[in-house]
Length: 410
Length: 91
Image 1 (tube, rainbow over the protein chains, first blue to last red):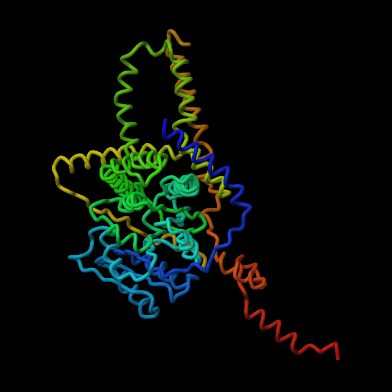
Image 2 (spheres, rainbow over the protein chains, first blue to last red):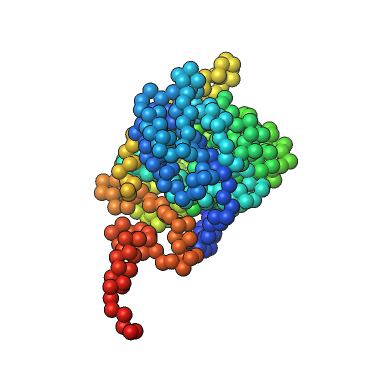
């Protein structure tokens, strides 16, 4: 019920603000341009690394205030060589090579390695398969004029959307997740989430927090909560858009979402009590924070309720006598309850003017169902980890095909 | 209310539910088979560059072929060359 209310409040908030946002021509303040270091961790990314590096050279942000650090995380392909070529031409591009012994321990470890070389006042992160707008940095850095802002997050848009059904569904999820969910949290002063890429931190704050926690799979969510607990806030900038390459198979989807689910659950165990006790968080931030931390437990609860509910349904009073009455609350709940996230996605697509993409919304039931075994497995593995005391955090990297390259206009 | 369900009732119920699910998914299946959506979403480019031009009173020239805003210096130079060789009507 809490999630139902949350989804509707978010959607209505964004809808209310949408007209105002549409009519207002937002002028970006280019006078507040701090030194920026961009960290790009890359492990076997030869198919996409050239694309983002080329884009980095095209950014409109002043090059004398820019430092780009590629962390070649023990790649066995040509990632390092491609990056070296760019580094020779552009003095502001630096390569950090990691050996097989040092590298391959996950994104957090690679980012920490890159952070040691960063000189900018603002530390931004981009994944190797990303492709930002030319003026993304100006839009992201602008919010740091407010001293209470500790981190920033931009919008992620799926580049290889027309590839297949999965990429199209992921694109829909992204639309709802960013332009509605994140935007509403920002508008309402709740917990805006740093998503690990297309965003970053104030350098001093990141240093004081000790960088990325390498023992957590969702290192971005972990940092989000540490930023809030330290008394700062994360801002979401919907206009700062960046393309990403979405997963293209159900297997890749499983790997990615398993990592997110397990990581979120780890963050829950690490921070839930601190969130409840924190004096730096408002009451509504504490509620939203707990809902955000427990979101990946919901599919596990759904499975549990099915396991308990189905036998009860058949073993209980004869259902034929009350089938019509049973349909009324179930239908009501299904339309206003379970479908709330679908409604959110639909409104996101509507705001983007993607009326035809909305036709695919009923298929999101597939990802909803698929997330049930994913989250249950993540939960079971986490329990096993806690019982056995062995930390088996294997970072399953998402492979990138470079298929999105064809959609970028040269 | 169905007090004594017969096989016919059950078949009708099954058919009804199947038809409902089919109708629910029909638009999605149509869109998958013949995509009309123009995705991926095109992200806005060069907003700041455009703003800078506007702030200086320079109207960027629109390239119809590429449908994006840019200041075409080659076209501007050609126009300047043409104007330079035109006879001065004031003298």
